[in-house]
Image (cartoon, rainbow, N blue to C red; front, side, top):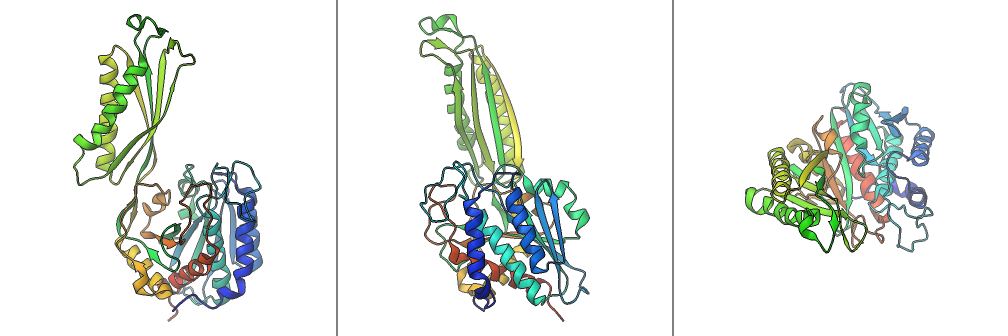
Length: 389
């Protein structure tokens, strides 16, 4: 079965809805306008229950099918927040808020789940309940965790979670997913090196923290190449170095910041341990003092095998089995949908955005032609997971 026919009646409205979100991007938990627009349209459509303010600014819509005898409820999740990036698409619907843009396609994700709500309310051709989860703060704010901490599972008996994300470079009308770890943990590292500042012409009278930082940066790269099993995966990236204010002064302190990504907890633990050991020992070797702050933000996102099977079946109904890749290679990019998948089985699936700029790029734009494919995937998944007998 290709794209479902009902989507044609809503397509113009959904495109304009997406364009409106794109013109008015909001960051992290400050997605009040977006959440209000979503909640209002859900109510207008006849969604049975609309709950606002979950996890700060999250919205949950509940739709019941023609029957509730199965006792089943599945959760479908979309993210709503944008990124602090200056847009350079030149699109008619480009961001009207300087320094903010939907550079990851969350405007499209929200629109596709809203479109699915319109179709599900209209047909109700399923047995059970659907929780439509519109989440804030995916981009670094752990909005999924906030919604869980605010009682998402206590308030709604969700038994399975499913998510969908667009992927540039994946052809339009195709899907991809895979079982097991699919996206990396997201950790932040902050390393402080305390030396003894002084005149740049008298380095012997100082303890130069810049030299210590240089040695430490080099050493961190050996963790992956010399401490990690070559068949495992990890990335350690030092992305910021803050030191000094003058060209002729050796500073007192240096601060390094960066990120660590892994695909399993033992590797994550090992990297943290080695980073701490290197920070302290290398600094001490130069008579400086080094301290590491290791902040664990997002866990590894793992798709359950049964969740992948169900996602693949729904995508296959929409796009044809030949256009669904069930063996997608993992990536070390992060995704806070991991928090939900740690609580219930399910899967994240990627939907092709075609030939576009990469995610988080000033020229990225969600492809409007993806909307009917995504809407159809969601409704096919609901029908398959909760069929009417």
